[in-house]
Length: 370
Image (cartoon, rainbow, N blue to C red):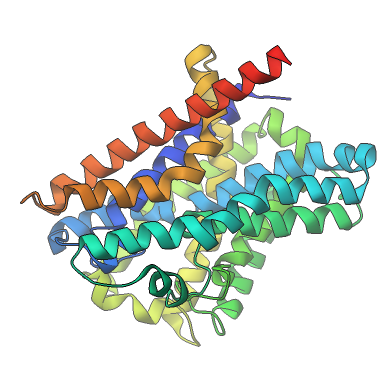
């Protein structure tokens, strides 16, 4: 079962993640490993504008990935796949598709390209230091998403099947409260942006797991169409929340993210509670709205759209090394971050999807010839 709207949305989200990582590499607030060695950063005013324009999406786009994974992997495909293959074979196949890329990245690929970036910046570190001294240990770059998705997938396969049901406004409100509350409680122990062994991003698990489960419950019904009343409700919530965020930030005195972020990241603070509430609101409403928007506006089909959708997973997997390589290559050029970041982002999106296209085209050709 392939739905063109969801496939097209997946392409946009993967491109957004790649471009967002490129921006974070040159941001003072950081959030992507190149910020550890970057040679230039955005002007504070530019970074504030980017945070206001692009930043809110960063609070819920990753949750949308898990929402889509829940719809298709847990809600539609997994029950039938487990019934046909059995739990053991299903888990083995998940380990191969998701676990192998994560292991190879964490043990070999990521430390290698971090080592290249550090030495390109004139910091003499050995490959072994780049591997063992990373915090968190077994850092996998953007592939943390795949490792966590593997854990969720195995959990769904081993648990009793979830009953599919129509998603109502009550579900939307209830999941928002659950995600916001558990996010705040989780960050009492694991503050946002903290590292755990295996790069598990435990501080993000409430929204990731919550949206995965909501997608699994919504299943085929959500995949086909988000109900009009839910679409209108979530659209209004997202637009209203994003419009209020800059005003709220100004009232709270948050004008420099790098200097003001710490109280919002966790602990028993009102700032952390506010961020948890905003995240919970945006991730639940935003994920449903994006799926609904795609179903109403992103239904185009054709060879290009199909090829990009087929390439998206590979593009996501290979983005890290490409981003670090391009940023390192541009390092000697005397250009501001406002120029370098978009060039790195656009170049990485193009190269990552080109590699994905090549890999999946060859795989398809091999399958047809066998």
